[in-house]
Length: 257
Image (tube, rainbow, N blue to C red; front, side, top):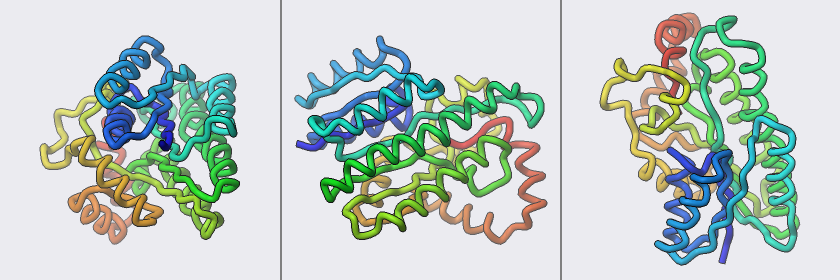
């Protein structure tokens, strides 16, 4: 039986990954900060699907938390076959309105943790000749959106570059770029969502099913919805200055993910 480790597992996209993978018979390692929610989730997945559900409480904004997950991914006695780097958050406010401490915290979670956990997982997977990594980014990676968009753009570039370097090793890496998904993400960041058209909202469970299918097909980038694929095609053709203007008026109030 294979094992999947999911960060940010207690809500939103991370919880959807945990549900889907457990339903398919995979054991899961659930990573988040809230021990109570982790234990409740682990019990539910174990009772419903009969899988082993391990709890690992860790704050990926802190060295101790990142190191703990690195150690679990590197443990040869308990190999992890799939890593889902989903943990992330948004900050409300424009550049210079957000504290430097919060900006650096975002870079730690979105970039340093993703780099270190991907490296730990991929090294072990390469030695076994198989495995997969899904790094959750955002369509915000393709538009000017301050630190959030820049960090997600880094995730996309890093993941696709690492996937190229590991080609032929049996290790698959993919950046997942969702649009707006109904999760706790916006509420936690204090971001309003009233102005987002209904058609832009995605279902987390359908998104995850598409993402896993894309990973199985060997894709290194997944934009899991035809509407967003079309929208990103328009974005590629639009002047950067225009995109920046739209982002400054709307994107900083509510970011996709």
